[in-house]
Length: 213
Image (cartoon, rainbow, N blue to C red; front, side, top):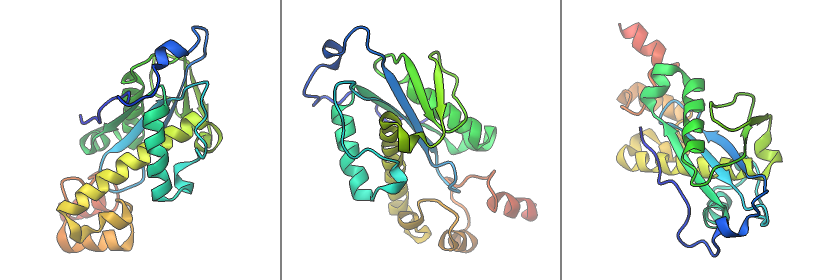
């Protein structure tokens, strides 16, 4: 299991634990990135925003430019109470299925938070198994700032993973398609074969392997 470093930024300009009222309702927003691609881990992030501070510009990561996501990710890391980014591996995706792997990554993200949330708000309809009460919110990444923040961190993390893979295997074009099943990506797999990072349980790779057998 791979996990990114867990959280609080050493450069935080305040000590959140001392400035949050004891009765404050501490919400952790949770979202994922990478359910649909044909390669790589599925990534989940959990973010607890400071109840007394607002980060302007938070939105569904899919509606933001890459540059704007990077800018907001820096602010989220520096100004949130805490955050955690976690993954479920390609092996876990192929073993369990993408939904269960996604929920596993979400569970890891919540459990990795430095502070204990009182509520967990998740984008979508499925809830991970965590100790706290969970509220599922359809399109929550566009409606709730904490979920928007999680969406941004997860997307930035996974895009960085794709760029690293591109550096090792530039012929596959991961810098452009980010693992999705574009014609460029499918053509590269047909010509060069799959990488270890490709999800064997996903079509068309699953179908190619079945036909080969």
